[in-house]
Image 1 (cartoon, rainbow, N blue to C red):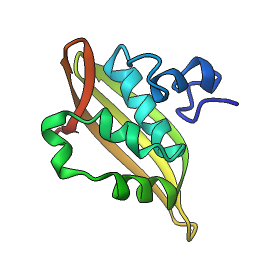
Image 2: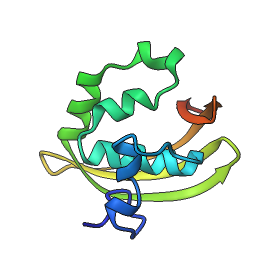
Image 3: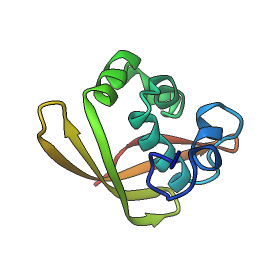
Image 4: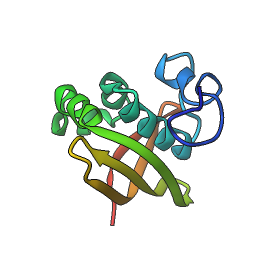
Length: 122
């Protein structure tokens, strides 16, 4: 099975090792891709665990799970990367067939050799 992050790699060779905690994403880009794949595979626990601990109070697993489930995740396009920022475009379709495009610049922070999602940045 191809990875839901649209890397063209097999899931087992791409994001699955991060989702199963076998490995940690080594870069902000790898973490961004694995978080997109977590939405596509309804892995809300991974999304919470890869959010910066200080920011987790602004999220909850039930909402993340619902957001993943009510959408079909159709494509991920990486626009630009910087040392701790990934700009991307996520394509998804709601259950009612409405297509959406979300463009975001995400900020990441490294703590004890692990990358975490912090927030959207301007």
